[in-house]
Length: 255
Image (cartoon, rainbow, N blue to C red; front, side, top):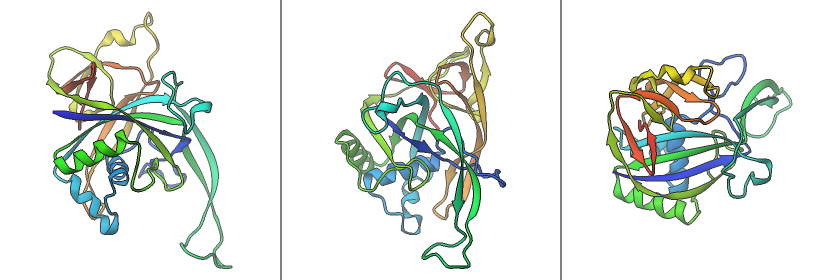
C-alpha cells in the first residue's frame, strides 16, 4: 500500500468539540473530515455543495495521524523544527458576530471564549484509493503548492506543510503491545503495556478525545464517531491494536 507522508503546522489550530456549548473548546488534533478538507484544499477539490466529500466516501481515504508537539517560535512559517516541544493550549476572548455580511447597527458582538492549539505540528499518513487524486496530492505537496489556502480548522488559521516522502505500508497484527507512533481510535485499541506507566520510565500523558468525527457524508452529517487515544507530548505509546502499518520505520494506525 502506497502512503504519502507530510507534516503540517501553523500558529494556531481550532477543531471545535461538538459538545462544548458555553465555550469553543478544541480537540488537540484535526478530525478526519478536517483532514479531508485540508487535502481538498491542496489538490483543488470544490467545496460547492460539499462536493469534495464525495471523493472520500466509503473509506476511499485512510489516514494516520501523529501529534508531534509545538513548533518553535522562529519556525512558525519556515521549515518545521524537528525538535519541537510539548503541545500547548491557549484561550482567548473572541467577539463573534451573529450574522454574516456587512455589519448592522443592531448586530451586537457576541463575546466567546475560544480555545486554540498553540503552534501545533502534525504528521499525516495518507492513502487514497483514487489514483488520480493520489497523483495530484503527491505532486502538489512535493512541489509545495496548493490550489486553495490550507488552514488548521478555521479560515484564518493558515497552515504550512512539508513533504516527507512516499512509502510502502506493510499491514501488521500482533498479540503483544508494540510502539505505536500515531493516535489510536478506540475501535482498534486492545490494551496498553502496563510497564509504560511504571515510575521508573519517563512520564507519559495519555489523553482521550471523545466523540471524535471519523466519517462525514456529502451533506456534512457525521456518520461515524469514535474516541481517540493519543500521547500529549508526542511520544510513541506501547499498545496492542487490532491492526497497524509499518511505514518508514514507524508503526501507524490507519483509520
